[in-house]
Amino acid sequence: MKVYENTGNKDTRSGFGAGLTELGNINENVVALCADLTGSLKMNEFANQHPDRFYQVGIAEANMMGIAAGLTIGGKIPFTGTFANFSTGRVYDQIRQSIAYSDKNVKICASHSGLTLGEDGATHQILEDIGLMKMLPGMTVINTCDYNQTKAATIAIADHHGPVYLRFGRPKVANFTPENGSFEIGKAVHLQDGKDVTIVATGHLVWEALEAAKELNEKGISAEVINIHTIKPLDEKAILDSVKKTGCIVTAEEHNYLGGLGESVARTLAQHHPTPQEFVATQDTFGESGTPAQLLEKYGLNAANIAAKAQQVIKRK
Image 1 (tube, rainbow, N blue to C red):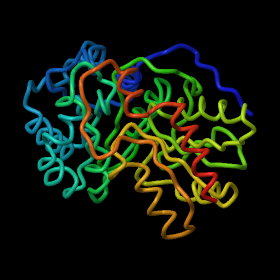
Image 2: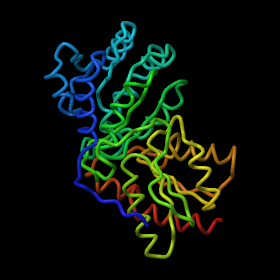
Image 3: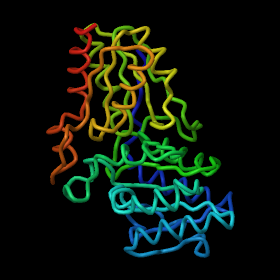
Image 4: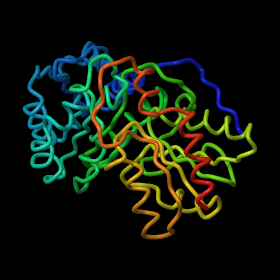
């Protein structure tokens, strides 16, 4: 089995900041807007280097979305930055009406997603944002796994015309994808071959999926691991090709099982190739306050539970 090396834990939000800064240097149409969280979103360097293209909107997220939509009319490519909760739930009407319905070229960049903003508590966590955004017609939904991939995705979405939701996180996580690697929207990344079970994961749980595969390998179970960084459009071919070989699948995500990656995969399987599936995700629940490690453990969003679900689903073949 292929072994991936963690080159050092780094936060994905810093990958966004680095990508945005690089974009600012190569594309003069890129502008950035922030809702009073410049430091948290790592947008400081862009603001320092391009003060004429940075707009500090303040705690007025709905206004930020409207301003961003307006900026596209003049040919600008606006990147908005705030927490995932405030990037979606708080401003859903503005996104739906002013951005998605009008097919505006706005890049909605959302940090502190899922449970792993930890001690900020349940009211700042969001576990339904992927579902909210993927239901909007024309909205591309991306959930990156590490620093390098977040940087690459940030740069790539500037060349994609249309609204994009880019989801990333707060904590430092394993950084294992290639430095300065390419990023293709809608194209899954095949990380590891396997014959007994398919594991498709997104975001922070991609590394956990690789760790689960190592645990399974020690038990004689061969797991195929796929990084689904783009949830919409979903790479259905990659998923179907894999399950036709393995005969079962586990989906893993830092999101509610209702509306997330797992649900999109289940629809694909139901339509094209019915296959046993198990879900690693939060259930129909909100989060709570705690450290990221405590929360991931409590809600089963870790390698141990992915491995356990893999063994369960193999028995259903």
